[in-house]
Every structure is written in C-alpha cells, then in structure tokens.
Image (cartoon, rainbow, N blue to C red; front, side):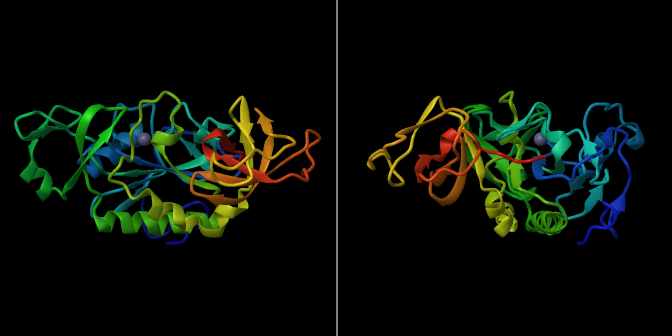
Length: 288
Ligand SMILES: [Zn+2]
C-alpha cells in the first residue's frame, strides 16, 4: 500500500459525513479499534454517518478493515475523524486531532452465560462451536468488563495482514510516534478495544526506529526515585535521589518496565546525571 494525497489509491473510498477540520499538523499517533460488530459493511456505513445512510452523527474513523482483509477508507488522513473520544496519550490530550483511527471488524467480548454459550454486546447468543466457525476465540479476563473470563473473537490473518500493510504505509508517510489501542488512551476507563485477542506488538514493531525518535518523557508521580539500575534493589542516585512531578526526561534506553534516563535541568537544558526510573511513572511527551 502507498499513500497519495492522504488517500490509499486502489482501495474503496467513500467520505464519512462525520469529520472535523482539515489538520494543521500531520498525524503522530495511530489508534487501533474494534467495531463491536460482526458485519463490516454495516459498521462502515454507520461510521460514514449521513453519507452511509445511517443516523450516526457522532463517530467515524479513517479506515475500516473487514475480516476477509477488505479495506474501506472513509476519511482522508489530513482530516480529523471521531474515533478516540475523551483521550490522552502521554502529555497529548484529545487524540482525535492528532491521530489516524483504524477500525477492525470484530465483535469484542462475549460473556459466558453459564450454560456453555456466550452472549455478545447486543445480547445475541452463540455456541462455542458457532464462535469457532466464525474464526475462533480466546478466553481472557478484562477488569473493565467484569470478573471472570470472557470470549474474545480472534482476528483472521487476512484482516491483520491488511492492517499491517496499512500501518506500515502510514508510518512511512507520516511522522507517527506511537501506535496505541483505544483502551490505553481512553480517559473514561470504558473502552476495551481492540482487546486481548489483538496482536498489538506485531503492529508496534512497524514503528521500528521511529519509536527511538521519541526520547522525551515527563514524570507523572509526585516523587519518583532515580536509581542506579533497573530495579528497586538498586540504590538511589544522590543527588538528586528523587525527581519531582513534571520533570522532563530524555530516555536513553529501556529494560523491561524500567527506563534509563537523563533528567533535564529546570532551565530545560540536559542535566549531567543519569539513572533508572520505573516507566509506569513517566509519560511520553509527543509534540503535536
Ligand atoms: Zn474504539
């Protein structure tokens, strides 16, 4: 796939009525979703709003990818689509304005009904056999849905291949800094897509060296220990010992949950100290 004038030549194009303004800056984030549905054409029409003959006036996306790998583009990449809702990634808020939204046709979680069957988000009942026939599923818990395990329909290889092809083209064309799930940017804590059955890592690796171009982060904890190594068993680097909320860091390296950083001085210049911090307490700084 390639991108020409913010569209993908050769794939179906129809423009959603639910779009925001032309962008001032290029997109820097790709957000991956599931449609919460089984029927790709129906989801595409829904997300096109009036242009798709639907009553939906509040949501859209850039591309919808069906389970057989068919892709439909419903917004040019230089227009804002409405897929992320209230959202934040690192220091960047309102992710719609900075991102490209891709919807994968997938029903999302189904709840076991205790009788061996599963019920989808619309109350429709499926046997395990019917789910297997529809492409298989995996059982996994998800705190946002409830307790216990839920069935998550798998993503067919043909669908993933189209998705990877598209993401690869987008990363090559725009200054993309992050590939994220809707779940991880949703500030209301409702969203679960694209869910545990989605191979997020296969998509994130398409960023390759582009991920290394994102070296800035900010401390989100009130006080964060700066340590001599990647673990709590390492002593604090004194001074400064702890870093205050808001301190900017240059990320030099990563080791599991830990990041090797150079804190910036309050004047914004790079400091002389280096050390390790737990990455759960820092957030990336992405320039829009
Ligand atoms: Zn979503």
